[in-house]
Image (cartoon, rainbow, N blue to C red; front, side, top):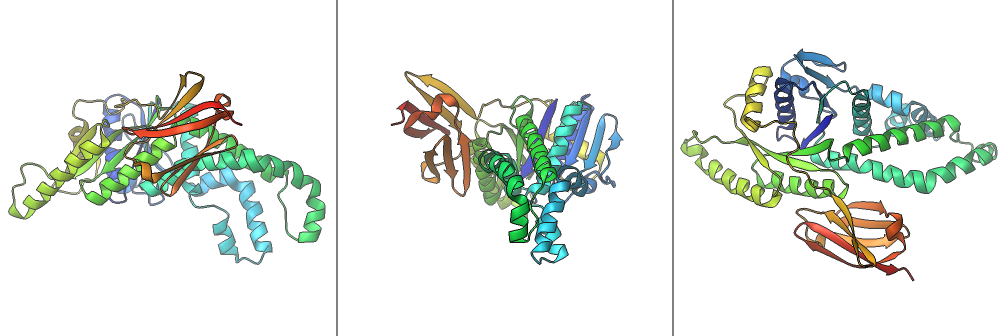
Length: 390
């Protein structure tokens, strides 16, 4: 099975590109499901039909769905949400505010992707195409499993052992409800599901991310930042889709400067995203709505190429032996040395890329070694481990 995630700056046309790719995939014989995890669902607008939260077949081998986030929250977070709501109400929060605070920012999209995990395990489809939220939200979403893993391994197990023993006393003293076994079980269940989902999304033989851009300076810069962050967290990107490119037949004087600027930015994109292949989607003379126009767009983007194939295979992480030590190589495209901070803390390697931070639990072979140096060359961060920690 293949999973393809599409993301990009808001307004670049990622939903349209996702839908066009799905139609192309189905036309080549793949049983395809297209889903939207973006809170602002727009697949219905793109296909020109009312889709809703239930899977709907709109063509042979093509199904679509706009995931019902409230249902996913209830199934994955129900017991924990009820506890946090009661806790906030006991502290005097308004009922509406308490309800809102029971779901942390980014968790809506996370629960949507847990739905993808379920479909993957059922193996009903050959291809799942995901219309994700804009890049900023997607970066936060894909980093969530790392954050949750840190909490579960560092804090949760201690809390789970201690709280039940002191719960009766603490509740009388603090006069607030404390989590019971059902709440802890719900958190553990969600964590197991998140780990399974994470393994699917970081397996480059299954899942790849495609960045949708317009030939504009700000859009390309945001895509560059997202590309670096996705690589830092171990996700594979295999293509860029440059959308709304002015076609050659447009010779109107008014648009001549726009065409010139687009060429400059497309050349820049080719340089900065290399070796990622860049597919071009022309600007159509009308709004692309409905299956037939989406089919035309899919043909325009991919031509005779299979959109389901993996266009670039690069492992984000590689550990190699070097004498008595090791080198940890991390793909960090479009990154400058000044944007990076690196340090170790116990068993963790901490990498900060601008305002994004990742804590990497080191494998046993590296835990007792010192970091000798780090280099950043040709988009690869190499961290050299040597000798034992004194």
